[in-house]
Amino acid sequence: MEQPENDSLALETAQQIILRWDATSSEDARLRMIFEGDRQEIDRYLQAVDQIQRSMESTTLTEDAGAQNQSEKINTAVEIAMARLEDEFRNILISHATPIETDTLTDSISSTHLTHRTSTSIGEFPGNGDYSSRGEEDAISREGSSSLSDRGESSRTISSYRSMSSIRELDLMPSDSICDLRSIAERMIAAGYLKECVQVYGGVRKSALDASFKKLGIEKLTIREIQRLEWEALNAKIGKWIRAAKMCIRVLFASEKRLCEQIFEGLGSAADDACFMETVKAPANQLFNFAEGISISRRAPEKLFKILDLHDTLFDLLPDIDAVFDGKSAESFRQQAAEILSRLAEAARGMLNEFENAVLREPSRVPVPGGTIHPLTRYVMNYISLISDYKQTLGELIVSRPATGSRYSDDPSTPDMDFTDHEEQSPLALHLIWIIVILQFNLEGKSKHYKDNSLAHLFIMNNIHYIVQKIKGSPELREMIGDNYLRKLTGKLRQSATSYQRSTWVGVLYCLRDEGLHVSGSFSSGVSKSALRERFKSFNAMFEEVHRTQALWLIPDTQLREELRISISEKLIPAYRSFLGRFRSHIESGRHPENYIKYSVEDLETAALDLFEGFAVSQHSRRRSQ
Image (cartoon, rainbow, N blue to C red; front, top):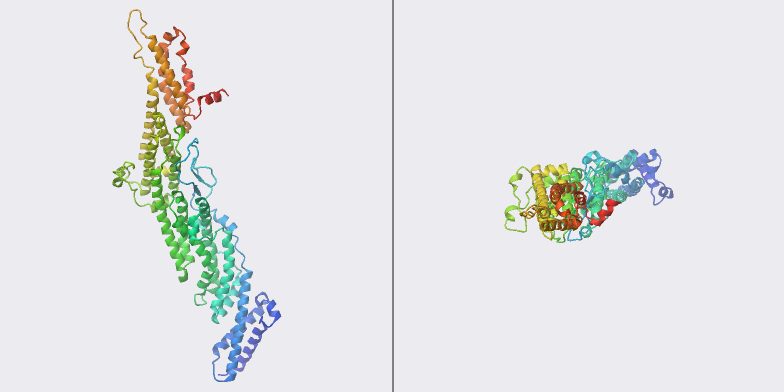
């Protein structure tokens, strides 16, 4: 079929325009880019391409030599045009391939979060170590603070845009450049050059995305390499991942998806989906593989809170992951994210169980000096204080009670717990109470390693007091533990303080009794001076020993230390004052009374101030004299 004369002229003109921009035959065409020039020139070239494509569609192959020759010319023109458009497509993409300034965006993301949770750092579970320190340091710290002993509201939070529930798409290119890219892509795809178009687009945008991705500090690690990392290094990388994941899903990947849609949507063959996957596949794999490696790593208790941070981050991101990776070719990423979330949840449950077992079986047998707070107590109480910070997440994940009761009923190495008093409390709250129960059980075992029963009672008192204060100091933890169990702990605290006083001071006060001092006879004063002298000597020896020994013992809490001293003084001072008042004259009337009455009432009051400071008596004396 012959073409009309006008169509032949139009085709010839189109071929001339295309050949003029053939970079293989023209130096000028090789040095200049059409889409960097005059708009009219751009439109003329695109119209020429359209004309060539229309002519190709209308040309039918016949035996006519002239028609075949014309068809070959058209095919050649199409190939030249597609090569030119591919170069133009690449050039426009490269000119707008500047990496996103992720630092600025990360800072703004980190300033608006719906919850206030401190970024948490926790050391490894304490083992059988040297407890020679005074035990005043807490084992778990948060970024920006030295310890958790004073747990205030943190000013540093994990955060996002719009309460981390929405996507922030950036304009990666000017609108006129997007229109040019779309006009080129439309013609390349129509001519059957979809594959070339996707490859060029993916190659350029992948490089730009990789540069933005690298700025976020995410290293390329295999799952095996992740599992071999030391916890300190892994801890830091998890923090980076959390920030990077939010940035990648909600900004980088979302913006790339939007750009793909702006250029390719509606052009057929799911071109937008193909280009998007070509661009983000490698960094998305790297991002999700890290989380997967963490989710299947060893379930050490110190990892729990970072695992929960990962879980919460991924849980918050899941709707956005579904939105960004909504294409059929991206289904694997949606599935992987859901599977990782499930494994993180299971890992968190497993780590809580591991922690309970570790508290129960913590093997240290070396008594902490001075009966102070055991490092295990500090670690455990700070640990469960942090658990209360994550109560919303853990409350959803922990759905069963602790494994106690009949399972352990015949095991003397494990405590039991009666749940009848806690029927209305959540499974998570029961786990926290159970942890405190097994901590006390372990501490009772450790107290038996003290040779002095008084010190053993003081040790229990110090540790129970610390447990009570940590519960009272956290409204969230107190609410979960409940006042009923808190009252039980307070009762145990009073009981241990009473046991200490009985163990130490009953013998001292026994020296101040009247029994055995009085004698009968007409020539007697009614008091046996020899027995009285022995009584004073016994008192002096016992008090000196208590004073010397228990000055070295330590009650780190100032208020508890003062309360116990007052309680001791309220029993000791009146008894000594009364005894001295009744019998002083009998000693002073004899020889060397100073050998028997070594202390005045004021001396005892002063000596009581030395108790439980953790220093030798001579050091106290020097300190008071300064």
